[in-house]
Image 1: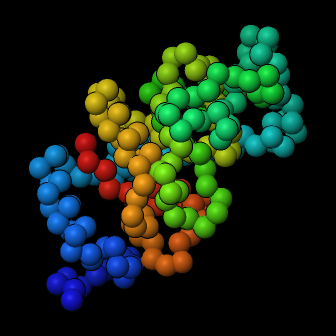
Image 2 (image 1 turned 180 degrees about the vertical axis):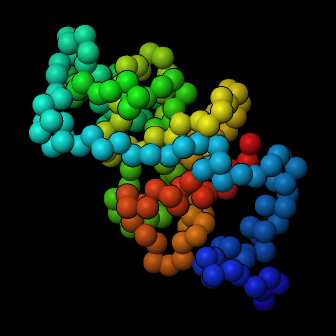
Length: 192
């Protein structure tokens, strides 16, 4: 039995109204305020596909002083790190305002119909040792709106890497392809 009438943007999937999940949310209320990820980060996907980089003659080599490493999905590890550049890494000349910064979070983009992956997202925090770098079009970048403390950054990356038992807010069934809908991640609730 529903005790609240759901709004038009809410789905009627069971997880939203499951008494156990509602109790868990109530138990976690003492851990701090809940904000959408979009209130803590700006989210964007870069337009740098392989084809665009080749067409724009932006490809270069690691030896070029203006070359920037392109972070692709396979570079984002399950352990939350950005892998060292392998031999086949693409390098390109990318404007400074489009490059990654230390503290950015990068997430592998999903193409399949959207449900949180069974083991959460492949998410990594970009460190100084990973720079200079830019994200490819298959990577979503979360840039903190204001600086995060180490515990906050760790909590958020852990949250993104854990399995979610329900679809993201604002989506009913069937889920939408996330590659076309990164805004669903920005509406995701996050404790900080």
